[in-house]
Length: 127
Figure 1: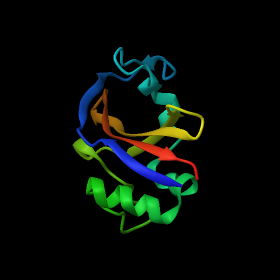
Figure 2: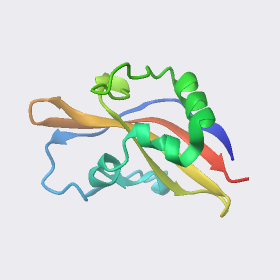
Figure 3: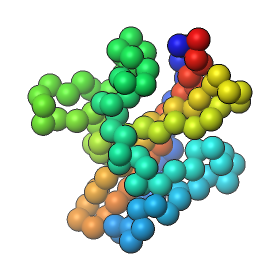
Figure 4: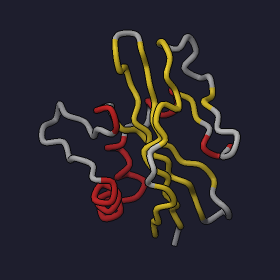
């Protein structure tokens, strides 16, 4: 498996609203439809579980490239922009042996105000 960064430029506030009534509502990117996601989808995929998808070596590469702080206790989580928890989701890539890995920070930013930021987009190639 190989991984390559496609975009490390943060896309802030792709969602910025009150707590959603429907966590399954899609957050859409007209220019990049493969990036579309729902909050329900990402909240089931915390960043720490990404090790099960890419392994320790590639996870370390992602952490180093993005400057992500490693949690020091069992109560801490990986954090991204706005000090929000990190999540990820996968989408089909340009061919069947490629996948897009999209890293998102999301959560309650202020009481009843939820935001989500795209932190980075990676491409995974299956060996």
